[in-house]
Length: 359
Image 1: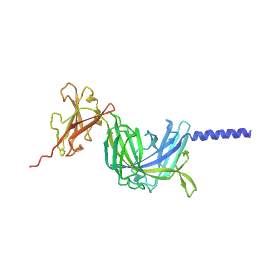
Image 2 (image 1 turned 60 degrees about the vertical axis):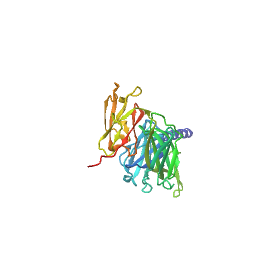
Image 3 (image 1 turned 45 degrees about the vertical axis):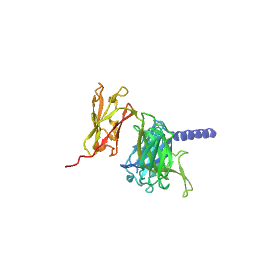
Image 4 (image 1 turned 90 degrees about the horizontal axis):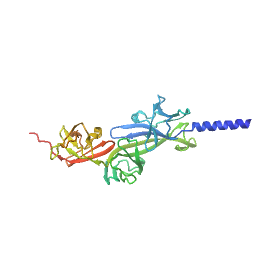
């Protein structure tokens, strides 16, 4: 009888422990992300088993109400809080991460205080340029902190979809250096797809975390005080910049229709019209106008008209002159757009003229 009870108890504990451990934390991270216009703060984690529609993931701050975390497949399974504020709002506060599997009511949780030390703004990479082959381009940049591995542990170069940045095509880690030039040979850029190249300068800082859901692959560091390995979460300080790149399908455009040359006064407070022509291979009316950029400027407004008098309707877009990324040496202006999810683009000549002299 005792043997039966022992076996029963063992089976109960085995089933319960395996049921409870159906999901564990694989990685927990808080992110201080410096960008051109803002300093962002967010948090995310990875799980083993990676994903189930029955998982409910959330986090809370200082015992406050739970806030949902979104599931993203960003090259790997990530539960992400999205941007929740600036890092200054969260110095020293206690975060709790929770995952409930509603299919069996099992739950895991982890708690840690975001450290006062360590979190900082990382310098934005500058002088970013792209050159060389369109299919395997060379990306270069400079970061003033890159001369010190104590300030930047490494760079991460990512290629993501320009429309859906959670769609990861390729990534690699690059050793820290102040001046970097890297040719992307591990990925081939395809025609008609809009890409965004992310350049991340990254510094990691680790701090202890407690809880009941740490799997065998969760990172642990030796704690001399406790004389044992303890679970640690990661504070990621990084700066992120974006570089758009694509090989557009060609379309015909006409800058300032009816004008030759296409003169532009950059000091003008008016608009520059650019027509996109319908041809046998392209229907200009299929363009998503909110994806149209000319010289890096978005379209201010647009209309339909037959500008080349061939019986087909074309599209005319207007761009604020003050928004154009042109200078006195510019001889060409380029337009890009999306139609039915594909990237298209065309160019036409421009002549930059000085402002008229005041009498």
